Length: 206
Image (cartoon, rainbow, N blue to C red; front, side):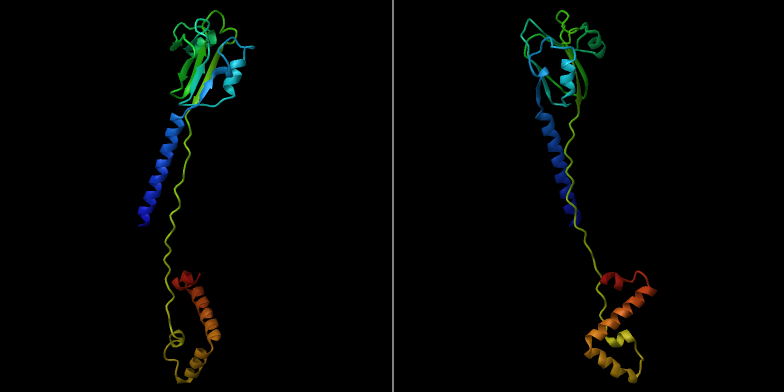
């Protein structure tokens, strides 16, 4: 039964992890590149500053807002990004607004190939990361503790057989004095534990 409960809790945790990962991917965020229209920036590092201030995940979408015919978006290699060329673009968008889904992890480079706009700073590089699912730990399974009950014994058994009739009056006194009997019993168990470490009787009382 305990193994079945553990399997059930583990299965629920795995389902929650899977659902979290699916939601993180399918419910991606949309980012308007630069926070405004895609155009020549006010200073060269404008778009790099914007990109570094966001954490992009797989499933997010970049939105380039621009007027068709005046600007475009070219996804290029890192080399062409540095050189501001678009001789072999991976993807090109000439009609605005352009929506670019981020479908995998990595670095992605985008420029505007119109005139010298890229050299003026109209380019952006984006680092995309995998979403980290929320790890839900399964609830702990309560451990089953099996205790060994202390063997019940009479005062005669504790003190042993063959004590002789001269001790019977002492036994009767113990039966009428529970507190005294308890003290003797505890003392006896301590002595037994001292000589036999790991005694199941002491372990049970502990």
